[in-house]
Image (cartoon, rainbow, N blue to C red; front, side, top):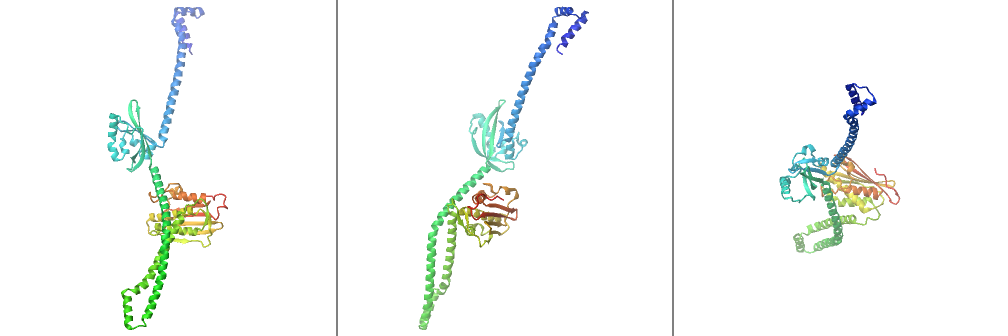
Amino acid sequence: MGLLFPVSAIIFLLFYTQQTLSLTTIQQLHHTQPLLTIIWLAPIVLGAFGYILGKFVIIIKAQIESENNQKTTLETIFNTVASAIISIDQKGLVTNFNKAAERIFGYTASEVIGKNVKILMPEKVASQHDQYIKDYLIYKQERIIGKQREIEARHKDGTLFPATLRVSKLKIKGILHFTGVIDDISETKNIMAQLNQAQKMEAMGQLAAGVAHEINTPIQYIGDNLHALEANCTDLQALILKSRQKFSEFSADLQQEWNEWEEQFDIHFILQDTPIAIQQSLDGIEKVAGIVQAMKVFSHTNNQSTSFANLNEILKNTLIISKNEYKYIADIETNFASDLPDIECYGNELNQVLLNLIINAAHAIEEKKSGRGLIKITTEKQQDTIYINIQDNGIGIPKAIQDKVFNLFFTTKEVGKGSGQGLSIAHKIIVEKHQGQFYFESTEGEGTIFHIILPLSLAKTNTPYLEQ
């Protein structure tokens, strides 16, 4: 195709000059028409130029594709990173708002881009933000540039949440922009609060152990002294009765004087009331001693080795310790198997599990707000296993969160009422340490029943039971 143009030019010239086609005439035309030489070179020049241009096109296309790929990669990173990334210009207007920012703040990018970033701030901070930018542009003070700090941010619905912010500056086509990387730390704050609460509860447990130990001795003194008073009171009653009999043998005047003394010192009331008061005090001391004993059992820290314990007794101690949590909220119904043998277990840790379940049951009934509730606790022996069921008629566990209740730090309770560790730790204690089963059934609005299944002896069980 490249030769078509010069050959056509020769034929046209031959026709124009009325010459015949021969090698001689062609040579004469090249001598008389220098342009023919240029025409012959044109395809070569054009071909070379086309080749070079094609190479340039390929290189430029590759660069464009590379830049597009890089842009796609950056956009993918920008929209898949977990942190919110927000860019603003010198006026505080939002220029970029990634997917994480949409998730954290509740706005779509189209709702925010072009608006002032102040809509994402609490009122107090928002009123000063424009001045912060002006001060930076005038005085170049980089007080927050490049530094991470904790702030309060505002969700689309108006609620405030804690966050961390790191601001950086950059120039795009010579124009200064600011980019902020923001992380919602609500969950971290909640976990820290739960950990602090757990540490406080641990300290309170250690304090309670010390108090129980210190109370035990004076309680014994009081109990012994009350028993002595009871015996002395019995002796005084016998003495007064004998004195009455003796004075009845004397003259009427002496009998009258004795009767006046009894009336004056209210002997009749003392003889009736004192034994009752002493007995009530002894009953009270017995209850206090039971609480102290239960506290000593709970505060026992040697949980590195197993021992044999009776689950009925563990549950009784647990009910004593937790009474203040349920006594105004629920009645307790127990059905303890009379033939329950001692089992090999980590007793202190089982105390912890059962206490947590009873308190949770009381809280569930309280949250339901439908009057006094009922907590049923049953124990049963079946072959080589012990079954414990703790059932309440409380608010129940919503189906949407039932698969999360054994997750560490998951809780729906406010700080101070739940740490989010109880059921997670309980699951670990029952399933991993005791090679048992731990599961629950719950219907929202009706109540929950927790099932614990334990082997009689850990030594006979080489592999954990399958979790149900």
